[in-house]
Length: 195
Picture 1 (cartoon, helix red, strand yellow):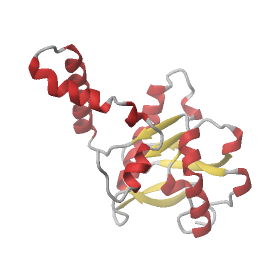
Picture 2 (picture 1 turned 45 degrees about the horizontal axis):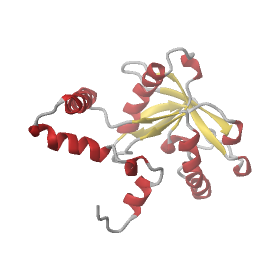
Picture 3 (picture 1 turned 30 degrees about the horizontal axis):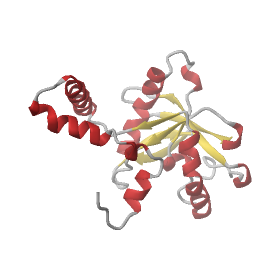
Picture 4 (picture 1 turned 90 degrees about the horizontal axis):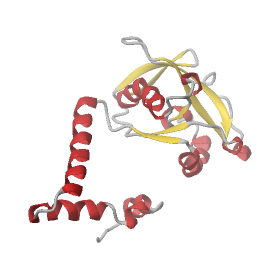
């Protein structure tokens, strides 16, 4: 692990970013880490995901060393670059860099972990794209997202009384309240929530 993680300069808000070198079909995902400062306005994506069971891992190659990650993260690494390329079709895919906490933070160093957790708000705010990885059931997730888009489209077009609950639901989720920056923290950190 020592050769994978070089020290970070906390004063410069340094972070590590992942470059995905290859995702090969049955081969291990191959990545390397680089150090950047948030002060330098570097372009990068950030990954939002569920770690999954830490006991169920898959090996990747990180800086030429075997590195175990959760299966959910391994699956995400196989797909995020393609999603970034779809979001930025005019960009060179070789420029893709992503931040994912389980890899970019040395989880065995409590001091680093603490300082990097304090930077997470800035990391997600400065990322040019946050990729939300919902899981590896891609076909199922695609169907669900298409269904939600269809519901949204149809509720905009409906005028019958039966459409009222759907329109109310769409309007509910469209309230400015849900667009606020702190909404997630407020709802997650609150001991009890009343809407």
